[in-house]
Amino acid sequence: MADPIDLRSDTVTRPTAAMRQAMADAEVGDDVYGEDPTVNALEAEVAAMFGHEAALFCPSGSMANQIALQLLVPPGTELLCDADAHVVTYEMGAAAAYGGVTSRTWPPVGAELDADVVAAMVRPDGYWAVPTRAIAVEQTYNRGGGGVIPLDTLRELRRIADAGQVALHCDGARIWHAHVADGVPLATYGALFDTLSVCLSKGLGAPVGSLVVGSADRIERGRVIRKRMGGGMRQAGILAAAGRYALANHVDRLADDHAKAARLAEAIAPFGVLAATVRTNIVPLDLTKAPLDAPALAAAARAEGVLISVLGPHAARLVTHLDVTATQVDQAATTLTQILRR
Image (cartoon, rainbow, N blue to C red; front, side, top):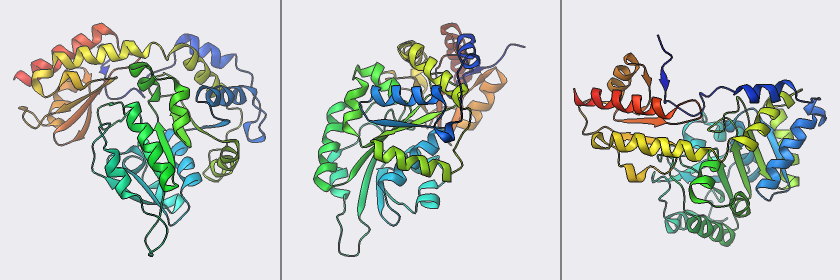
């Protein structure tokens, strides 16, 4: 039986043969001592891409986000973010559990956020209220269907953060997709944020790793937090080499994934997808008016060799990536439309 067509996430990719060779050839050292040359090179490259002074290689995107939040939001103060943001939805309450961070959210709107709503939520010191210390946004938005926050909106958030004397963090797990979709230079994004987390294993095809990007002082403090959280790695250059290969070879090709997602979305548009809203590699399915709910659709699709993610009773998600071909996208579209017509 053929392998299933896996559209659950862009985290399911496997290293290419060339990436594996880069890993095998990597020069390594002990990164806890700061002596892994491949890790050091990756950190310097990513920092330069975003126009920041330094970066810190981490085992996961969740750790990278939580290090950034601890750098920006002291215990007992608050973070503002979207109610569906990854930092408060998929990171196991880490901001509160590890950082003592209070979170307050605006209604989930994905990439279509209203900067005026965010501005009205910023609370200054005084009056015994919990003061705001940072705003976090997600680029692209996972639960917002891979939506891209417009550059003008981000610039307005930067103005709001400066006026309120608070920090601005970007969960940039898929910022590479935003860069390719809108053509905004990575350094332009970097200039707007005090810290960013960027992921190598979502879309870019690396097996492991994210980085925190920021000032040299913050990253030095972040190194201590990483060690405290169990993220100190030794000969991590084997993993960093995969990330360096991905950055050199797999960013521009994200346009292919966007095209595959648009093709998939258009094929199943009559069953709950607005194809025009699909900007990157995530195809959200609203199944409220469909004949099957999300768990039933996922089960039926799995039986036919197509794997999809269930996000809620009537919400599902399809994600295109490096390991799914255009032919497989067409096969998946045919399978899903046949199921939804039953």
